[in-house]
Image 1: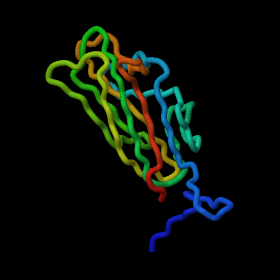
Image 2: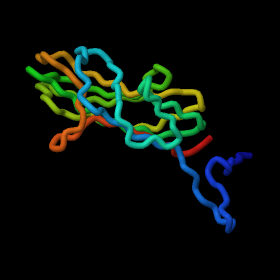
Image 3: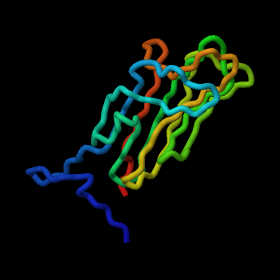
Image 4: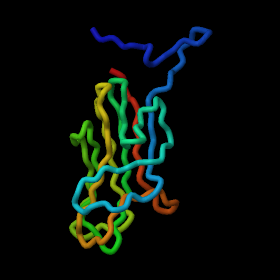
Length: 169
């Protein structure tokens, strides 16, 4: 028989009605462009600007999410790829759990993908309470002379990473 530990989700108010506790949630972005991205190499995205960090599970030093509540988490990544001085034919964003790829999303073209193209990924991952989750990006070599992951720009958008607990274990 299954059992749900409601103490992780609800607390009682003085009137006895349930109140939802703060559930783990984070939202981070790039505060400035991440430059020096090597061509055709998976590179960890160094998200450095915290918008939300409910539960304090975002590791600002290692730039990864460390959820301690076991359960299913929804993760969403948007990666703005900047290719200066040419183009590329392949962009990728991926999610890793404990250094192992869990999911990836590709933007591929038979011709060329130019500056400020976005690639996105949304994926549900089970975390056991001691896992970590990171986002990585990839920009193929093509004719590009400079590669970077882009920070937010009003007319173009930017790179971001967020996630939240969907269902505790």
